Image 1: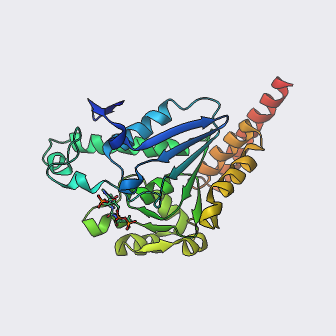
Image 2 (image 1 turned 180 degrees about the horizontal axis):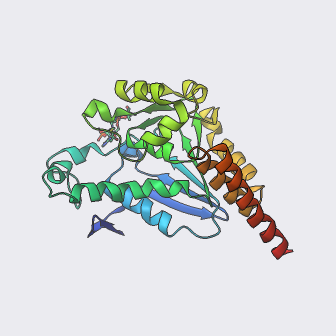
Length: 269
Ligand code: ACO
């Protein structure tokens, strides 16, 4: 059993509702969406647990792999949340729709926390995507720094087909990766993007045969672990900031990071 505090209220949640497995092997942590019988559908409890994992990530972890058990990466939000009965122990969207502001927004903010930490500069997150990544599933893949796709992967921003907007932090990385016109087209048609197209438009770093997915992710993790952690953290921070800075500002940021790096290197020698 896991204790989940959502929107200020503590709720008891079972593994069935959380649907996550978390394992650490040295510098690599693996988060497995683990409800294959529901195609790894996500609930508020899932997002709460994701946030908790981020808060308590062991210090030695440099790589976080997010993967799905079974035939799909994730079928998105658990559709039972749309029913009046909802999921035992969790509010349904019907209940939240009538909640006083700002309760509902706080609930979404708490869910978003589960996704946002995957961008931390001191780690590299890799989504290993097989089968469907729909709605919240697509957004979870977008929350990661890198995406390795199996050839059978299908990415779909299904929210609009349900009358919703994507709100689990996916819209900015999507626009950053594919540009505004393509992001509009993908979201507003709610169509599926296959693995080959995903790679061609910048949504995937690598596409491999489904049986090679785990090995491809292991190889990528090993390559990422081959460089110095301090330099990797500082460089990721630099790269993440580049889009919001002018060339002069970015050059100044490079100087600051380098001075800190060289000082750290000589202090350690
Ligand atoms: N929520 C709850 N249960 C789900 C979900 C979901 N999102 N997706 C699948 N399941 C359940 C099915 O109800 C089914 O349960 P059952 O065996 O008790 O009937 C089981 O998982 C298997 O689903 P199938 O549809 O039989 O699996 P298949 O591999 O043929 O299809 C697919 C997978 C394409 C993912 C399909 O299940 C699907 O379209 N799911 C709904 C996707 C969706 O609309 N998600 C919401 C997106 S919007 C958002 O995330 C905010």
